[in-house]
Length: 94
Image 1 (cartoon, rainbow, N blue to C red):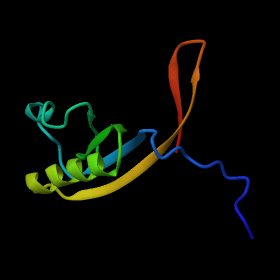
Image 2 (cartoon, helix red, strand yellow; image 1 turned 45 degrees about the vertical axis):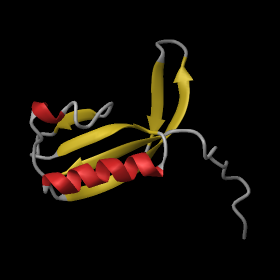
Image 3 (cartoon, rainbow, N blue to C red; image 1 turned 90 degrees about the horizontal axis):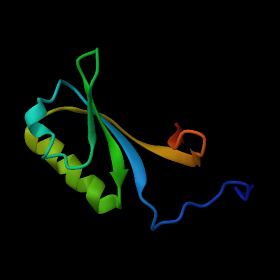
């Protein structure tokens, strides 16, 4: 059985990642996590999300989380869709 209907991703294209860690990060860490969006969730966890140019960039972020001593809960790649021309928003699917 083959997966011929599954489109291949261009390996040179950045990927959106969502990284969830246990506990809330303070705002002083915003610059340390570069272009990632930091979302403090109601359940007490933090969601870091944004584009990573390659696996090396992802591993660099994961090392920073390790260095903070914060438990890593999950790392997920998010498939990005086509831009919605009506309001210029990026449509994402998990």
